[in-house]
Image (cartoon, rainbow, N blue to C red; front, side, top):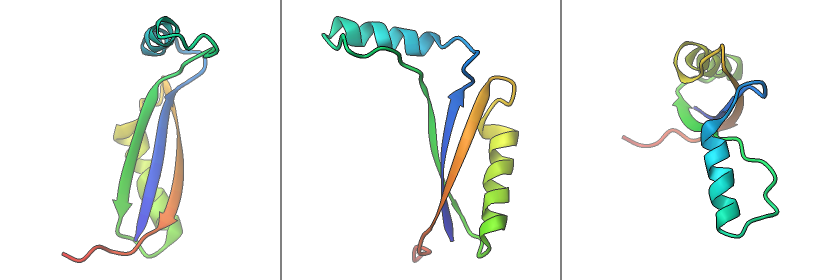
Length: 87
């Protein structure tokens, strides 16, 4: 079994109003050294495959079809082997 740790972020060319709002709020809280903020999503998928390539294919397909908007977002996938949990 694999756990896919997925980060979905806006492409650098896409404006990030949520990141701007958080940046402004951090400045108001006294964190003047924070220069830039970009917001994104973090997703964990547990994939019941024994083959690493198959697990990566499942995670990639999930990102391309549902988890990320291919026009505006990029994603990265990091796989780790995990023990299957007892039912």
